[in-house]
View 1 (tube, rainbow, N blue to C red):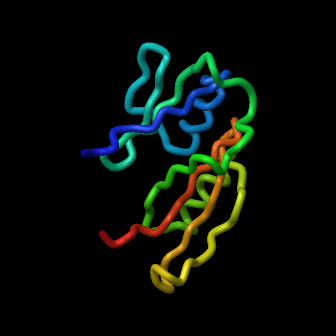
View 2 (tube, rainbow, N blue to C red):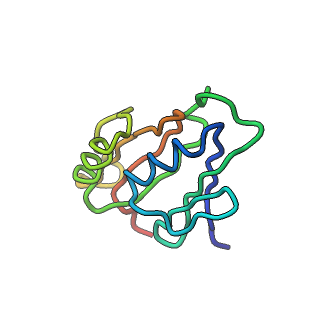
Length: 120
């Protein structure tokens, strides 16, 4: 199996498209009301969803992660592009002293994290 993508539904998908374009760069595709960015082998996709309204009431329920060898630098770039800081980079000792993770959110309040690549 392979995780293909995550779909972020929104009442205002254009606002999220503009946000993720600032954070992730130009999308890899935009068609049929859906816009996506390839990260590694999978996609983060944004589109309208009839059952989604307003801010995410439970942003910690689903958190998606992006691996990066430079958590601090990527964190600063995403923050400067408009991501809301939930938690600045911090270490987690059970992986190793060089490992770190940071939590941010998009304009709808959806959490995503930057993290040091994990050994397989």
